[in-house]
Image (cartoon, rainbow, N blue to C red; front, side, top):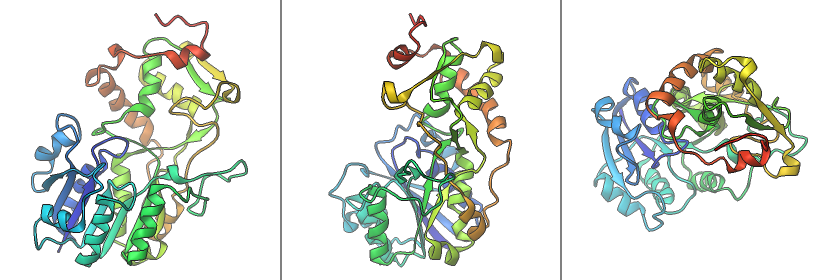
Length: 340
């Protein structure tokens, strides 16, 4: 029986992963106690943070100034957690580089003799060139100066049992960032066109946070294989094109396909593709995590099923159809559309 520490950022694309990891660990017989070191800049009135008490009653929450505090040391971090506290398992879902709390957590893990140090990195550190092969494997070139890579290298130099996962686009019921899919509904429910770069056949993967958490905790069952391999892609291999996602969202919102207007544009002429898009394919292969860690993967119809509760939350919880928005970028592309 061992203790686990989850280091959780204040929110954003990875904001719900600490919560979901804790949920998974609660049912794992290897873990006897769980602590979340939570960035105090989080909004306790928003998910997943407001559900910590009700859904994670036995999880200890410790608040600290994690983001932007480069003065934190291993000594000050140990003091926050409690003198004598140590953790056999660590999941770091906050550090952006080996400075401040990022360095401190690594240094503490070294002192604790941590058995498995799991780091939530990002597939955004990949830099595929024009000849890149998709899906991207773990050998795809990366941005050497990316904070996540520098963190990896520091942990390795320390001799930590590092396992680094690289997730992509994440969505979930306890999310506090909804931009990827909301982008579609924001336009569909208002009858506005969807400006999509290129021909819209670019493929992308969207992974439910529960599946990401199952992947991030899969190293518990195969620690030796995980540490030996070290780097893993983190995401589903169920792919969808930008254009097909538009029609899938329209179907959930009860909008007939013939009423969906898509404005394709040449991003080379208009500049970088608007968020959440890329000009080419951008998705990873989770083959290694399936092979080495026996991760079962994601059900083929997962996204289609999830969009039903997602749209319900968009309407009822986030008041999506009525929120105020700026359409400045859309107006540059959809010049014949009246947005006022």
